[in-house]
Image 1 (cartoon, rainbow, N blue to C red):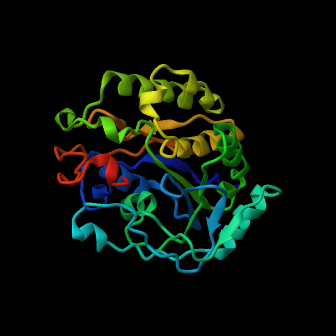
Image 2: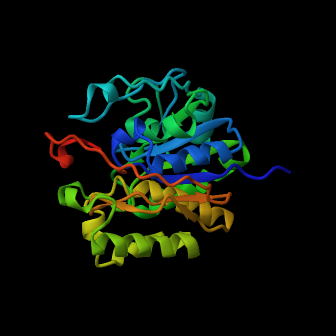
Length: 285
């Protein structure tokens, strides 16, 4: 019997990571080299945050440039990965009797997905489907969905959550560089403790005094819950990689289940680049 496909949560940070080689993107590239080739990717991106659960089911998903104020080079970036209506139907079947819409034309592959996959699978030759994040559902709902998706790992599907454990654009401090505020460091460490010890208890971090600043809105944090649910379903714990904070109020820490953390080559490049003329909270990063 072959081992289940690994799964991951990746702290995606700025869309400019698509075009840059830094400590974090080097880790994503190392992950791609170490992964067995998957049958498809199921991505749960912070940027498809809607009032319902849906999965992209078109054979050729459009590439969505869902951000503002960045260089034209980023808007010109293409990631022409095929979709997979077959895998989309498998996802909907696994989540039944809960309703999962099969999206044919309203979404596609957004930057939360392609900014990461540009490094993990740079040839864009692995089929990609995206699962929306239900904005009206509690954290427990997302943990449960993650657990119910676990059989996909046995079918060669690489499940990828993409967001940030700490994500507060209004509190970004350019002077912080690749460091975090004390509260961001504490909350990142608290989530690390849960993910490496008892991922099924992820909801406990909502009681943290640092939670309101670390998670002012839930969409970037909720993709972590899908990996936590997968871990819980398999009786596994997560392995951190690409650990770090940036600009005071972002965490880039990522997690894996089903494989060891890939080695990376340290670099001296800045980890995050943002447009100077647009406030970070208006960029949709």
